[in-house]
Image 1 (tube, rainbow, N blue to C red):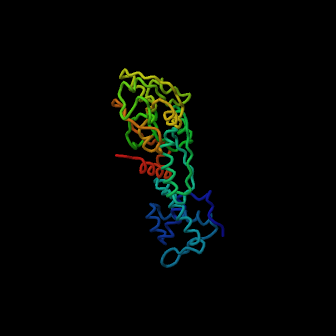
Image 2: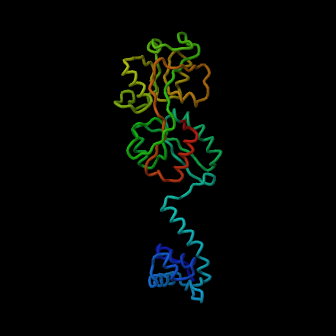
Image 3: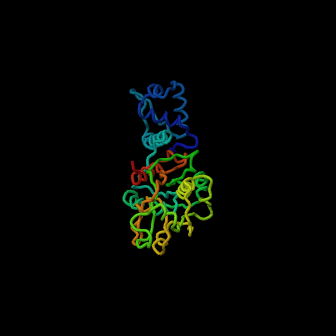
Length: 314
């Protein structure tokens, strides 16, 4: 006897086989499937030809499965169950046993603020999960999703809209960094001091964020706000990454304006003090984003839930 040929057995034949195994009666099984008795008999003939086995023999009580039918029945039932679940979007994801790499779009600020806590949590609940942090220009984020390279993005990303889902994690604003022994700035920062001092600005290389006509990042958001208020400051240093900012501020009299969540989630920096800004700085929403192609993926849904649990605030 040979096993059923999967290339020739269509879904209807598998459902007929499964119904006969459960009901043991051709008429009752046909009624449940919405098939006439001649259609059921024809399907059973096709099944017998495919398997090389009679599969069911007539007995006074109905149809009794052969040993071969009993042997293949669990596999047929499992296959149908998996197929039905997949069609309904009911696939599951087990983080304890899953082995998978997720690719997350993050700025260097995002890497500093989110990756340590995220990796700590994943190590506790999903030992087989790996993460690859992607750093791309903001204008390349959409294409990175469309190509399938990215699974998730976290940040202030107003440029991601059509074709993307998003979930708000928290709202934030800005603070000012200055060295502890700054000769002119003590415990409070006045507006005149803010405008008179020299600043270090985070400007990711090659993107021209500061001169952008729309708000693409937290850098352009604060720059546009200051411009609308008629406030001008002296930018003495532009750097492409946040990582160096605290060291620069600690070593000289430059000050820096950064999102407050960066300092909230970063390790404490000795020699650097955090001061509120002397004006009502704009607020922005930090969100997680994903492409519509990943919306129902069980693994992606699980990762989004983990991110929400770690970083979402009312």
